[in-house]
Image (cartoon, rainbow, N blue to C red; front, side, top):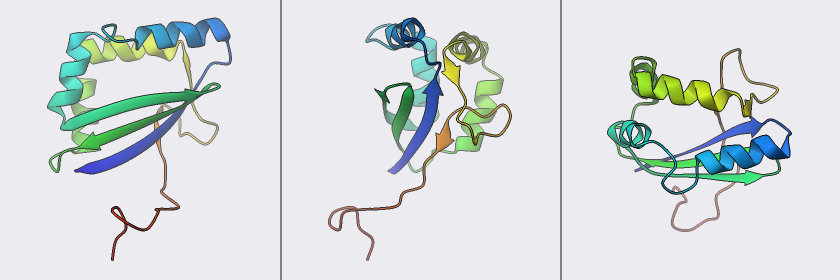
Length: 118
């Protein structure tokens, strides 16, 4: 199983942040979106917030392919509608490329033990 950690900012507006959280509350994400996530090989996903910064942690099967997921999303009307709706709340990181949303984080430290490589 692979782990990916991604970052994105929200608009710096308390009402928009609250609305974004409401869209992600249990039972609020449309089933089509959840099905798309699962079909791609993403097995677990969490989004955490501190201020207006979001971090997404995903655990994926060995078959997960981020490029294939992106291609599938571009052909999925439900995903396109969801992403368009979320655009209002999201703000790209300052170093994001044009059109880029979630940016992958680079691991810089691993506590030796279970996850350490030999």
